[in-house]
Image 1: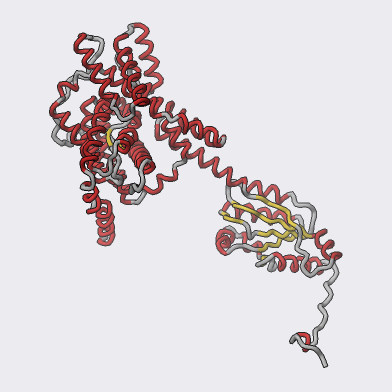
Image 2: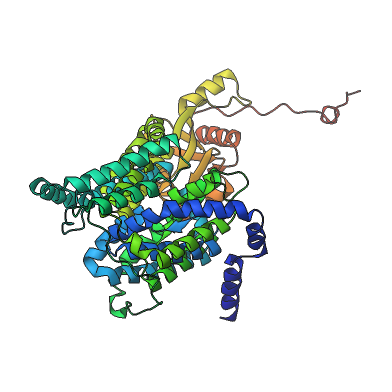
Length: 577
């Protein structure tokens, strides 16, 4: 027990910040402070919008950006990652709010944080790199569609219909708008989205989101537009940390949503950190530390009324593009948002909901990388199928199911492709020391097959059908030196094929079985069958010689003539006399 605790303690110590992290903060603080300011300006409307979309209100989004953003910056595994509320997480939270209310979301965040810390301790971060690119692209496309559809009620200025299915909610919102159109709200949303999209193309470094939101707020206030419904009152500061929301009786029912939130937080955070690495030279994140930092952030954020957080790709990209080089930039972003919470809450509360909806609509559009989707669709039919299936599942079901479906389909298609590499090919017999007549006679009664590639469950039965159709010969030699892998299913199929050939009176001999494959063959009894009467050989020439001996004993072939006797002088290489 003591050794286990010591290992856990050592593992936690390895995940904590070190002196190198502190040294990075002092390398170029001026550049990091400017980058943090820019990111804060971009993050403010997103934090407000995602807080509203989650169902817990704009204040929850701000609390998440401040608390989770600071903790993930300090304890995370990336120098450039910016964390906070994200659209993908909002998609997961909406049905949780509908089923369990705001306290359910806070409890789920706390549970997910504990799971992320456990994943970090178990070194699970490195396994996230095995998620196929089509799954990630389809996942991102589906999220973008869901985020856009979630904004329709606020963009149209209608009350949000009941329900947690985004397609149904969107349809009911459009029906309500058709009955009672609110053109002011629609105009605000479209104008803000248009300014952001057009401005990003011409001046990508300018924070058009905050400029458009400020302009929309000023117009709504000056013109007294009642149709432009504002966010509403915000608390002037973060609430005191509290566990009052935690109800132990609900933990069992919230376990599945917590697993979904933890899986999404891990996937999106590590994906975002990888994107940041790719945008820079010399930066490389630690996936386990990143999970640890996100876990601590999600443990703390609910205590202050925040929602579950992840690494945010959009904000991280802005951070990198504006010159950030250390964690100081992400810390500055969180500190500036905290100042806004304490000093400017009354002003922020006047922002029209439709303007925030416009920000998120533009964000959803910018999430879709048309070039990447086109390249993925052109790569292979399998990649295109996985992408489309994951995107549709994200839209119709939920994110976790979508990723699971994408991974299962990708795995099945990959296994199918690998199984197709296995071949059973007839090969000519080696002539060896035999004369042409003897070789012809051998070929009449012996057939040799070479097995290439993997012999496992995905393609083993096809192998059995091919081998069972062997022509009427006396001996079959299986050359197995090129079998790359074999599992229990492959071994059982091989055993079944040998037994069927034996029942037809055909002797099976093998050559070249690798040492690593003997245990699998032996476990199902196949090796014992292949060794029957000593019919398992190291090489093909030995197997052919044994086959000749068998045919000779059966009276099918004549005996080989004895080799001519050699004199002592010939054996020693000299001459007689």
